[in-house]
Length: 189
Figure 1 (cartoon, rainbow, N blue to C red):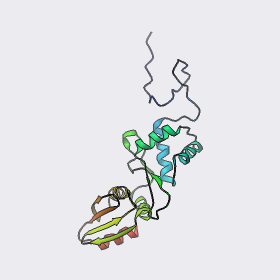
Figure 2: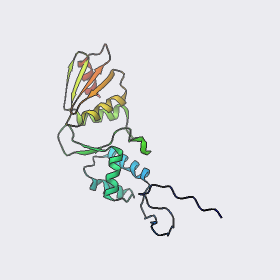
Figure 3: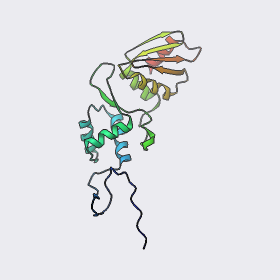
Figure 4: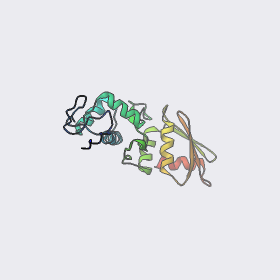
């Protein structure tokens, strides 16, 4: 008689099925795998402004996913989620990098390209200035890398690349475009 293979699921996740051995928890209704739970978190954060973990727990529950605050906190950390203020200085909301941290098998967010970039520019751009073939963009503290990543991923033909600090990023225009023209292009998105 051959022993059944050991379940190699995530140790944080409950066992599936009727395993009643000591130390083994049965699946509770609404429990989701880590990948499914994290995919739902990404979708929810991309679809709406989420201001707190408590709010996110309620949203997950409405989608049939039960989890604990500790697990949600770990998920947000693994996904690289950060809380950022918009350009208006309002209440911070959670944001997740566009790649959704593929190391954990999470699907890419639903928006991409210039649609996403346009939304982020509207939310995060505080001011823009130009010099030569450079556009200098100001964001709320901590948001410059996030906006630079969105610019890089949008792969605009007129953008050679970006360099970001904490609240300022430099965008290099592809010649013959000038920095002023690039600022105008970005404001039109």
